[in-house]
Each structure stands twice: as structure tokens, then as C-alpha cells.
Image (cartoon, rainbow, N blue to C red; front, side, top):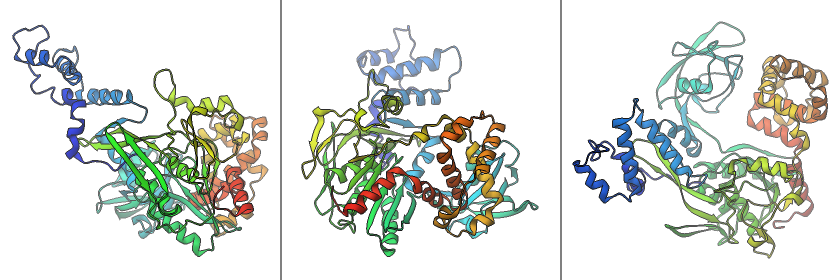
Length: 545
């Protein structure tokens, strides 16, 4: 979770960190390692205990005396990255070349032509056009092949995702001429003027038959609050009587976006979160009482991929006894980063504070010497935590109480009110190979592409989900196709994960026809966490557990 980026005028904040590096070509130039008459030597002696000066001295020595030519910029980038990673797992450096890509998901927009695409058999295939975007306005359709951009071939040349992005994205108002092949016909050119394309935070929104509204949030960006309110208005117009907010796999984003959503859900004056750090005085965030969903029965879904801003929302709901938290223990990131832009258009995200839920708990999991922070998920699986609630270690020394006196724990994520174990079928090695090899994705794309008109005739993802059946013959075809791509045939693995594989085939087809809305609609049909949340809300009809 990060705060709003600071601009370059705040360079002075980080100046002590990189002073030596930034000035290596200035007053340090001309110093010799063994010389005693160098004027700069006295400066070094005077500042010999200054770590920043030491960095500058070493950089100057490398520049003048190292045996080979050195790319100083690349070396400085690596030094900065390694230095920040020594602080904590979430402080890091962003090179100038990567800053725009890092910012776009949080800003909620980028400049481009507005298509979702997939690279299949070395060909760029349009999966969907963005509603209201430049490509939709020019008549591009799902299933179109993009074979060139401004005369440069993009098909049959082993094109990669980053090359496609570079070719199709660009400044607002600029033009790109794309070559299109439709339905196997002759190529034709379409000139498209690039524009602002939204990166939506709301991945899916729909109403179930029991009047349960569902909103899937993929991130907390600058546009998240507005998107959430729009989704809620849509559901309320359809008669929503309870709401499920799905934060599974949501790694977080802006703190203010999480606070904005909590404003919609909590009564006036309710504690949401507070932040505090060595140089950051305590700042409290409380609900403003203007929310439209304060009395609506609520469930929040979390798992081991729910982090940062997701944990702020879940923690605020849990500590205020506002709705149910359902799923598995969350990631455990309780550190707040602030982005500071540097003069060369690079940036650092540096931890400036910890955040605390309303009960006073910090949910940051341990890190530092002797702790393999990056392997925590694997450790949870090996320990049995994903399958058995009793395998979860709760630190009794970090016990806190909610508004109504329930006991909750800090020090390692949000523990849900209702634990739902992972589906063991999802742990099938054969299913994993089908997925990570790309065989499953390729097969479902081919099915959707070959039967696009027939599938669209279902009308909606809901109708498709209710009527379409993945056959045994299709599973056999998938296995044969996967084997051709190097996935070893495994009849036992196929049998063990048959239903899970059928579900993912169906969801993959839906994604290629209706996008994320179709994908999540299918997956949720047999989702144990979502099913548990719906059942719990429907039985009780309560707002608080």
C-alpha cells in the first residue's frame, strides 16, 4: 500500500541516501587512491564517517580505475535497489524506464488503442475491445488478428507482450495504423488515434438469483472509489439485499482508495485505520458517515493473496464488527510506502509508517534476518494452513478485541471469521501443468475462436454458465493438445482434477467471449468461499457477526 506520489520538489528528502552517487562526477572527480596532495582527500577525511560519502568515493574509484568500462547508470540502479531492499521487503527503487508501467495500474488509465489481446500461435488476437475506446469506435472486433503496426510485422515474428505494448501504446492523440485480418480474409489497415484507456479496479459485478450482489476488486487505484460506487448503484437498481466484496488476490494499492470504500460501509465516526512511523506522526482515518451501504449485510472474501489496502478494508470491517470476513488468512503487509519521484524520472517507494487496524493491531508478518519472506506462501502450504484452520499459528501475545469484544490477532495477516480451506483439486500437478504451460489457455481460446458466433448466441455469461456443458470428449482433446505442447499425459491426474479442469475450460471460454465478467461468473458457480459467504449471509441476514 502506498500513499500519493510526491513530486520531484521533494528530492531533498532522499538526498542523504544518494548524495555520494549523485555527486560522483563533481567534487570527487580527480581524486587518486594513493595521492596525498589531492584537495578532495581532506573532504573525505572530514566526512569519513558519512556513509553517503563512502558510496560516492567508491563510485569515483570505479569510474576512474576499474579495468573495464562500466555502465554507471545501471550500476547505480542496482546499488539503490539493493540498498532499499535491505530496509524491508516493500521498499524499492523504480528505474525511469519502468516507472510509467508501475504507475498505470494505480492511476487507473493508460494511453493506447483499447484492446484486450492474446498472443496465440505467434499471432495477436483481439479478445475484446474496451467499451468507448478508440478500437471499438473504429469497428475492431473480438477475434480480429493484428498483423502489423505502422507497417512493422507483428505476426509470425515471435512477438512478445512488451513488443505489442510498445507498438500499440503511445501519447494521447497520436495515431497508429494497424493491419487487421478478419475471419481469414485479406489484410486491411485501420488508422486508430490513441486515447485514454481505463484500467478497471472492478473486474466483475453481477447479481445472483438470491439478490446477493457481487463485486470483484482487483486493485485499489485512484479510480477505485468511483468504480465501486457505480457498481453499487447498478446492483441496488437490480434489488440487491446483501453484498459480497471479493478481495482475493488483490495486492493493494492506494491507502486513500481503501479509506474511501470504508467510508461507504461504516457508520459515521468509525475508526478505519491509523498510520504511524518514526518520522510520520500518527494519522487517524475515520468514516465520514456519508456512505450508502452502512446497513447492508456484508461479507468480504480474502485469501493469502489479499494484501495491504485489502487488509485495511478487511481489518476495518472485522474490528468494527461490520460484516463477515470469509476465506483464508491474508498476506500480512502492514507497511506504508510513499513514492518520491527523482530528478531523472525514476522513483523510490520507501516505507515511512506502519498501519494499524481500529483495534490497534499491526498485521505485518515478520521479516528480516533468518526469515525467508518470499517463501511464506509455500511454507503455509507445507505446514497445512491452507487446508486446515487448526494448523494456523496465532500469536497469543498479540491479541486484541473488536468493537463488540471478539478476540482478533495481529502479527501476520487478517484471520477470517469463517475459514474455508483450499480445494485440493486445485493442487493437482496435472492441472498446474495445463495452466502454466499455456495449454489450457490455448485450448479454450481455440474453442471460443472457432465457435464465437454460436457462443455469443447464449447472450449473457449467466445463460452460458447455466446451459453450457464441457464434455468428456473436450477434456480428451485438451489432454491430446497439451501433450503436443510438451505436457506429459496423466490420466490419473486428469481423473483426480476432472471437475476443476472442466470448470476452468468453461471459464476460459467465457473469458474469450465476455471478458472478466464471464470468467468470474463461471468460476463463482462452484466457488466454496463465495458459496459459504452467500449461505452465511442468507441464513442470518445480519450486518455484524
